[in-house]
Every structure is written in structure tokens, then in C-alpha cells.
Length: 261
Ligand code: URA
Image 1 (tube, protein in one colour):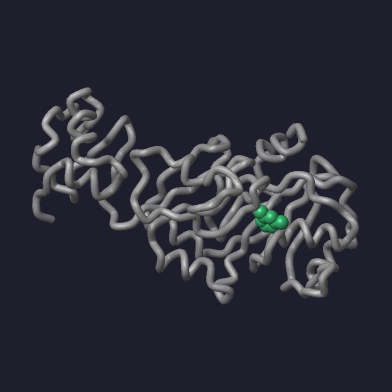
Image 2: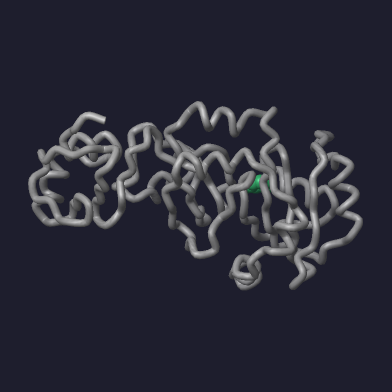
């Protein structure tokens, strides 16, 4: 790749303007291959140089992919009066102009949310035909009942008569009020409505995987990590629900069990 100016490289991949980058560089917050670089017009090779702003590496890839651990109280929308947007949680050095949440979690839901500026990938992911399995862990108001397994498997009918595609559900090992659910579609408030249809109530809901992309347990609520394009392709990989639940970290179950409501 031809050499380009450092400030151009950063401004095209973040929300920082060239003048902000100049100031950050002057403060020693911009590094090139690990060394602070004071001159923002320095020429770099995007293919081989490593550039960081405020300690975070700026990748040369065309689109940005961010996995956010959504906390409650934020909405998955770019313009909404319903509350603060999840986009406010993205640190400035990761923000680009076209970022949007690829998919929805309710305002009170937690967990894995992909934020990207890659419209084509989001379209592939969100298309009703994609059937990407999404796994949630839920805290229920009443104990789990084994009959849910077959009811969900056979395509549960919701209170308004809408029928869901077959879904998987099972109780978590450490509590009869915690359950895992896997859906291959995304209707409005679907998990909550499914449990309501069997006479239960979801108190807390957290998404823990999107296809083969698993929320790292080290990622706190409100924190995010940048993914490489090759990692994002894991979205389209399958994983076995039972194996996933068997190996599931008790960290998240503990978070849900202890969550104050
Ligand atoms: N199902 C729900 O009910 N809420 C979510 O946020 C996601 C799935």
C-alpha cells in the first residue's frame, strides 16, 4: 500500500479530526510501532505500521467491527428519545462515521451486540434467512420446567398467535431459575414473550453468543473490543448448543444470579 499521512489514516478510521490528532500527537498519545510520534503529518505504511491512539491500536481494515457487552439502560438505536444510545459507549478512538448496532437488544437487556459500519455484513447477519443462532442466558421469576424443552422445540405459539421457529432451551446447572435459550430468529421481545407464553417471566436477559462469536467473560458491561474481519466471520459458524452450555463459564450465571433488580 502507498504511504499515507498518519493524521489521514487515523481520521478516516476514527471520529478524531486532523486538528484533534495533532493535539493528541503533541501530548504523546499517538504511537507508531510503539513509539510516540509528535508530528501528525508523518508518513506511514498502513499495511505494515502499527498505529495506536490513547493506547488502542487503529487497524487498517476497511470496516470496523466492535463487540460490545451492552449494559442495561441503553437503546440499540442511532437516534432515539428513549434513552442513551449504545453508540455512546464506543470510545472515540473506535468510532467511525457510519457505525450502527447490527441487531437489537431491549433497553433492559444485556450482553453481546455487534456494532459495525459494514452494511453488507449486517444485512447478511440480520437477514431472516441467515438463521444465525443466538444464545441467551435468562434469569426467570419461577423455576424452569422440563416441559419447556419440547414446547420450545416444537415452535411455541405466542400470546398474540404468532408462531416461533423451533428453539432450544435448557436449565443451567447451578440454578433452576437460570436457563439457556437458543433462537434462530429475532422477533420483538421474543425470549420474554416465549417465557410469558409458558407462564414464566424473564427478569434478566443476557445474550452470550452470536453464531460462533462468544462474548468474552473478561469483557465488563459497557466495555467493547474491536474484532478483525476474520473473527467476525465466526458469526456464520455453528456451534453445538449442548456443548456450549456444558462448557459455559459460571461467571455470567453468577452475574445474573446476583443481579439486583
Ligand atoms: N429477546 C428479548 O425478549 N429481548 C431481547 O433483548 C432479545 C431477545
